[in-house]
Length: 279
Image (cartoon, rainbow, N blue to C red; front, top):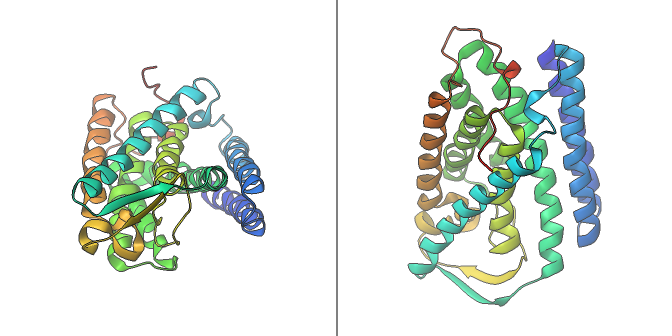
């Protein structure tokens, strides 16, 4: 029942925040404010429902070190997408025509913050964490990663390959990031850094949701295998490659730190303290 209550509470928060942001679409300043508010609400509701249903504090969203841990995640997520763009740029498949919109980038920052927080609370905080207790880290990573990828098939320009790519480069990678750190702050940071870099900085399409006007006025062209086509660079083999590599790195860290839950151990992974990254 704790899974049901946590899932329902987070889904209600997601619906509320998403509806509010959609209602002010086109107003960048309101999108920024409501997106940040939705992100904060998602974390607060998650902490509250975990405390009520599991009778313990939600240590994966502890306030201690939250800013630094989130910051490290943002740096890694941004750097990962920047590496994809560098490959596209050097191969002649990404062009910058000038500057885009600063206010547009700010609006996207709010939108992506809300999306990153609500999705990480749902997929890693609730789904992955609770499934991991029953099945172990690797099975939980595979199951929730696939669900995360397939959920993107609902997007406007979604493709089956795009959903598979998201499962590998984001679903698996973010679950591994959570396993390595036991911190939702870190997973939220990585998720936000990746999405904001894609839309807010490099102005590319995000998961088939449409072209975004961020800081750069840009365009992509070339083979879909490299550019991702209408789905955006998240459908690129570069993204899949970097995501898979980072997944292995995070799993190595999780193993080294003793954070891997073996199959059948029934260990309450969520009770473990979050591992702090170096500052």
